Length: 326
Image 1 (tube, helix red, strand yellow):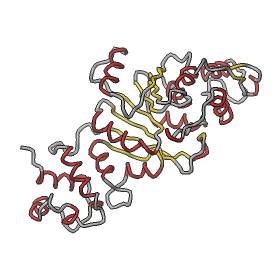
Image 2 (cartoon, rainbow, N blue to C red):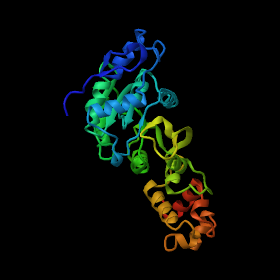
Image 3 (tube, one colour):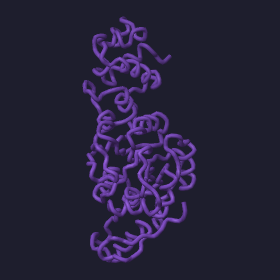
Image 4 (cartoon, one colour):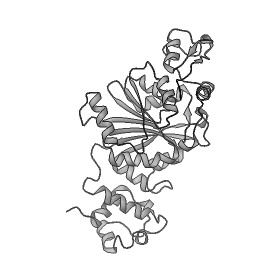
């Protein structure tokens, strides 16, 4: 695809002015030429502007990538505020799209590494972010990225220590939300906090408590690694295109000290997955051949309970007797 074409600014006092990026639009508003934004106010592409930008570049939201672009300034401000990042932080934004949230995160003073997998969108995103010095755009797939090499390179380029931590902010499509969050918690300890926007159903599973319908193996894994909570809701109306369901903002912050530091996580998660594979059955049936009657007694866990009734501590007691660390 060629160079991103300029487009006429549709803000009332800028009519007829050609703007090729959010940074240019923002500059116009700072000069007082924008009737729809106050001085210094974040400029976010409106729904018609976002649609026009895509059309001008021969692009459209891809269903296969689960693309739903945020086109509401209040929403991106809300996300940036909840992310709680500031100057000196490095924020990894996954699925940057057209850059509305990227710009809001950049306004905090943090260094933003905007990761986008859609090679058609990437040049548009780079043009949108032109002139914003604390934004870097990277074309990459978060699901296949070598995170160790990626973060090591960022630390080297920004003169940070090897053990420096990162914040992650992401608008995640349904098909990658669960595996990406789980993989990052399992394998990328340098990511200290995440703020992910996901379908409400996924958000409920990430934060579910024992005894609830949404509680499952993923909920136990999250509880092992981090504290997670629903930090807000997002309606379909702020997206282009509009999804059919509400979204949730989930804040995930790693534990400073693991609540079960005397068990092997791989053994714990395997036992949990086995139990939830037959979640409607009693544990003595769901874990038959894995946990004996004597081991249930030793772990002080009732064999007549179901997997969804056990909290993290109970799962920890079970794995200590089935997979003791010598």
